[in-house]
Image (cartoon, rainbow, N blue to C red; front, top):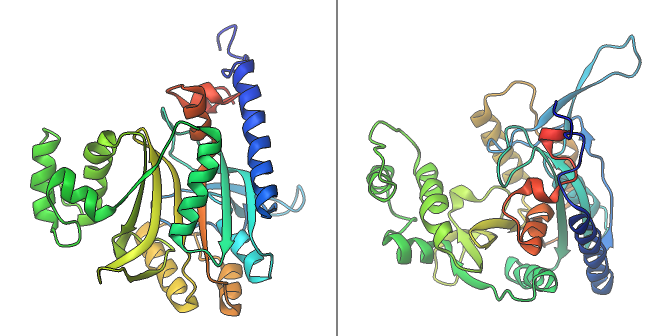
Length: 321
């Protein structure tokens, strides 16, 4: 360890900006009548999303007791939905979340998340509220909205709802100037690659993307849109090429919920991860019609402070923790 590695990486101006950001967010939701809540960070159940690797910890009830597996939350989503079912009304939470394998210029394994749920809202109403919150922090932004299909048609001249994996492999080889001929990926994986490496960097300012493929629904409702296309009622907010928020018109069907958990667990292939039985039991009692969103606070602070690395807005990032 070098002589100055004990020092924080975020300077005092950034610490003050973070404190002000948290204060402003709380005022925003107080004015909107949204209740702040807290839920457990550690749980006996993990998420099931194969794209999100949880941090596993060992809990002992005493020094002599055998260790029991627990998981640090990748999101407060499941516990917050249990509150919604119990009648909490609109709620939000500012909390720490943990994700294995995420370390880089925009990623830290431990980071701050703002998550909130609005009973009675659809995803477009929630997009409006996300825009209002972000604009209160970044007054210069004026978000534009495009469907997932629109962006692929305008930037790559392909329809993501009809293109196949072979066509996408060839397109990736052309657009990224690399050979992918030996890669056997799903159509969704190719679309993710093209979106993140070709489309996202071309998006100027703030952009909402909505109406994703049904196969990319996660826990969003899947329904037909105004054009009759079957879509996932999901959105993302991207600012200057960086994902800031991810939201859904929330899935409410308990059978479909269980089915998606089971499909996810088959893809992970990891022993020990289980579907959250508490959430599934709550879903049987009826989640109110609602929309929810998770927003990365550290990334929002990066934009506000005009810095390029997440380490610059963290007191002690993973490299110094």
